Image (cartoon, rainbow, N blue to C red; front, side, top):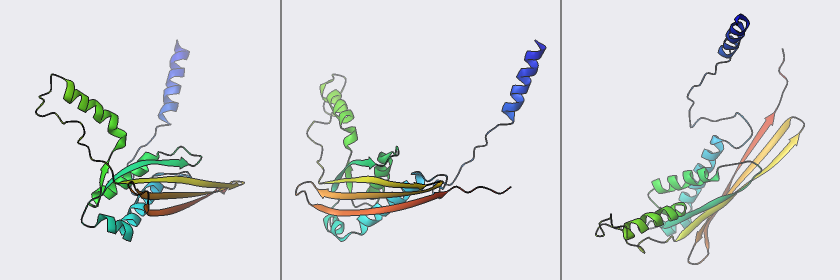
Length: 196
C-alpha cells in the first residue's frame, strides 16, 4: 500500500511539472508556427480577393445603382492539406456584404429553409396569416467560385510551399465572367540545428 501511495505521489509530481500555459494571442497577428496553411493565409486571401473585387471597374459597373445578389459556390481545395475552404468564402462574403454593395443567398441553408416553410405552411400550430409562402425567395444574379492550389517542394530539411487562390464572378444569365483574380502566398521553412 505504501509503495502504491509513493508511486501516485511521484506521478502527480511529474504531471504537475508538465502543466500547460494558455494565453490569448492577437487574432490578426502574423502566425508563423508552420509552413502549412494557417489563419494569416486565410485573412490575407480574403482581404486581397475582396479588395480586388471592390476595386474592379467591371464590378463597379454591375453595382452602380444597385446591390447585385450573389451565390457563393464552394472553393475547390486542390492542395494536399485539409483546408476549411468554407472559412475563406465566409470571410470574403462577409467583407463584401459589409461593403454595402452586394447581397447574398445562402445555398447551404436551402434544406433548413424548406423544412421551416413546410412547417409554417402545413402545421396547424402556425397562424397562416403570418406564414411565409413558398415561391418568394429571390434568385441569385451572379455566382462566385474558385480554386485553392498548392505546390510543395522539399530538399532535405528545407521546404517551400506555394499557394495560389483563383476566384471568379460569373453572370448567371449570360455565363460571362465579370471578374477574376488570383493571389499567391509563398512560405519557406528551413530547419537549422541550434548551437549549444
